Image 1 (cartoon, rainbow, N blue to C red):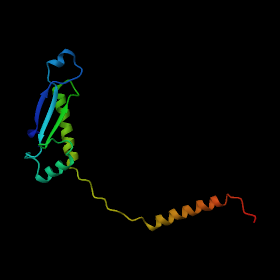
Image 2 (spheres, rainbow, N blue to C red; image 1 turned 90 degrees about the vertical axis):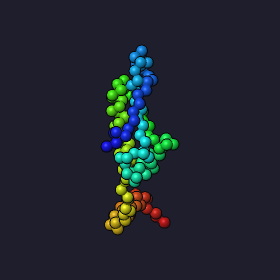
Image 3 (cartoon, rainbow, N blue to C red; image 1 turned 180 degrees about the vertical axis):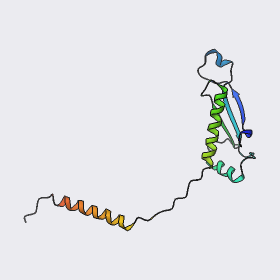
Image 4 (cartoon, helix red, strand yellow; image 1 turned 180 degrees about the horizontal axis):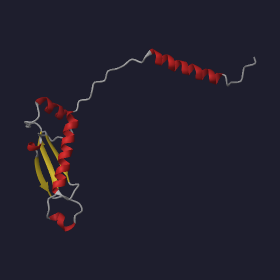
Length: 130
């Protein structure tokens, strides 16, 4: 499991909280070293390096922060969930699309409908007497 390789740091949070906010470190910062992870295989690391390249530092570390709650424990839970979903999405490889041909019956049906609509509109015109 990835959890033992995560490093957590508690920081003073900004925002509302009154006098208590100056004494308590409720903001959580999560650090994960992607290159030196022993849990992930080399293939998984390469996939994650490509998919998470905008979220990684120059040292290929993933840093996430959470200060949504006043509780340090709640913030830790939130940031862990966020981290696990990021890893899960990063490792997801979409299925390759196989192009399909349009069936001839569908082409005939479409052309038949066009012809019917065209004839309907032509029949609404006034006849030429010349």
